[in-house]
Amino acid sequence: MDFGNIHLYCGDAMELYSEWQAPVAIICDGPYGINGFPGDLVSYKGLGEWYEPHIKKWSSFATPLTTLWFWCTEVGWATVHPVLEKYGWDYVSCCVWDKGMGHVAGNTNTKTIRHLPVVTEVCVQYVKKPIFIVNEKQMTMKEWLRYEWGRTGLPFSKANEACGVKDAATRKYFTKCHLWYMPPAEAFEKIAIYANTFGEESGKPYFSLNGKTAITKKEWAQMRSKFYCPIGVTNVWRVPQLRGRERLKSNQKAIHLNQKPLELIKRTIEMVSDVGDVVWDPFAGLCTTAVASAALDRTCYCAEINHDVYDIAVKRVNDHLQDGFQCAL
Image 1: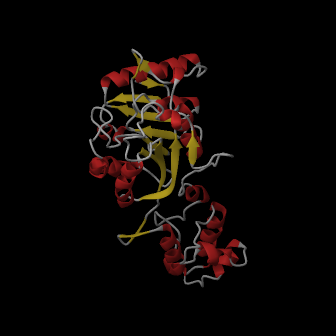
Image 2: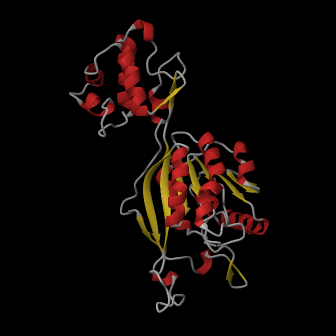
Image 3: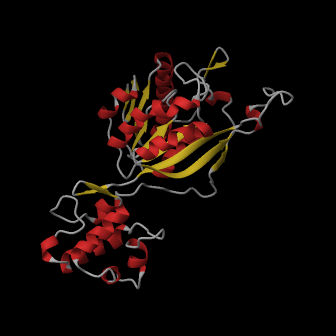
């Protein structure tokens, strides 16, 4: 079902990824390994193997612009983390959703429980690190920058002259140590121009991916994910569990036990994307990501495998669009 730039699919996301545009943001809210819904795993121990085919697909379609938000329990995320690293996803930050004591009020017997009441989930930020291939060898950006400048035959000190700085280029952009920093687009452009002007003729072009022209300032800016830090927001999100009109119910029972607050999904999208950018949600549930994307004027692709849940999600998205997002369902 299409609603302009909002595309909803009923089916397995594994069969749909190739039809979707490359994502700037991926919102993953799939199985937690807590036997919470039909199709969920009974234990977190199998989550890594379950997610691996999806993560492999995400990696093949993602770009260095892509940010992944991975929702799960703490131990579930820890189990999947090595698989994410295996396929080139760099950990950035772990955000904790604190639902408050209302989440367990009246449902916990402190006389018999053997652990503290759990009122949290995690939403973990990853980015897709750029990889450069040179003579069939993979290089990180840090390695590739030093390799390309080394080919010019120029001393590294000349990079400071190229950038018009005292020592920032050698101290940050070409250092081997932990102080390394990705050159801003303006600085990279100066480096590439200088290298191709004064570097050895035999090695030109330098800082090129196609062997014909150097990477442009605009292209270099696409080598890093976007991030806009909202004022007053930390990595602890104290937002109560859903109640009232936003919680979708049938016969007074929640349709989806893990429906996320629209506020939080909008936050994750806004932090890492711009108007018109593409957002994926491969385990869409009630399509909160689609509702948020429509409100923020993003393009969105959602997949939900459960037909009953999908039908309700389609109605929800349609109602939001019809109401101009003035009401929360």
